[in-house]
Amino acid sequence: MANIWQGEFPHRNTGEDGFRGVAPVRSFPPTGRGLYDMAGNVWEWTTDQFHPEAYTMRLEDLEPGTCCSNPTGPDRTADPRNPYAADSRVQKGGSFLCHASYCESYRPSAKIASTPDSAMSHLGFRCVADFPPPPPVPSDVQDQPAQP
Image (cartoon, rainbow, N blue to C red; front, side):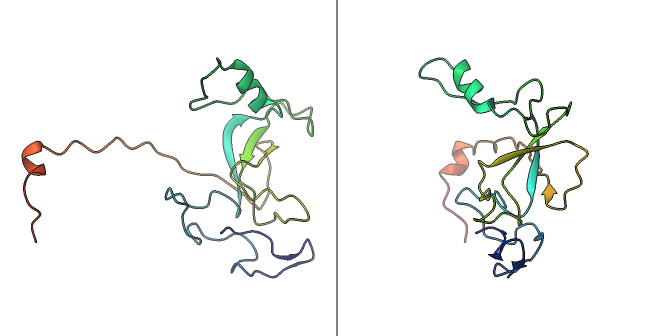
């Protein structure tokens, strides 16, 4: 489930999902991996420069039989829709304005580009943090029965 446009785009959003605009974080259930709001609601800024062939360029750089791990974006922007932009960043995931008749970008793999001075009402960002793994449980504790 995601917050997307429902109804006749762009004339009438029925709000069948409970929202006609931006929804609060965690308004929908998490994915199977416990992630919230991976698609729809607002496009999410990334730090990557936009280049329409970024995925293709990554594949060409890979050795046979290997895969990309924590890929980064290109060194500079190449946005064909905005060729004079010195800085155009990737936005991912679609927004509440996505509709099957218009863009169908309400999926994590969807991407568009925009300059950092954009003032779109359907644009946000995702906070990400790395947590260290929990410390191992000492073996003498593992063998003890659980306390009621």
